[in-house]
Length: 61
Image 1 (tube, rainbow, N blue to C red):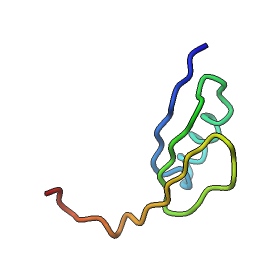
Image 2: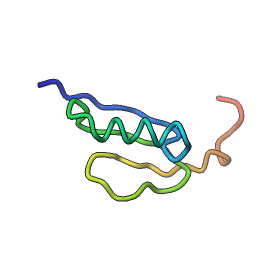
Image 3: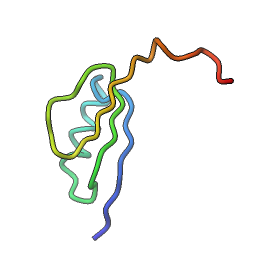
Image 4: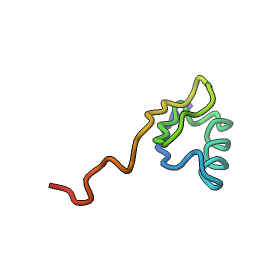
């Protein structure tokens, strides 16, 4: 069996919620890393770092 990790940005938006739902239901996906502005509801699969995107520099060093 193949286990995949799915990165996802914007999992609280309209399209992101759909992508998250599909990733959580897919048995091939063992973990989802979802960067969001707000916390996601509890679920065993996603890793959910909450990020303040407004706090990041506009340009990379």
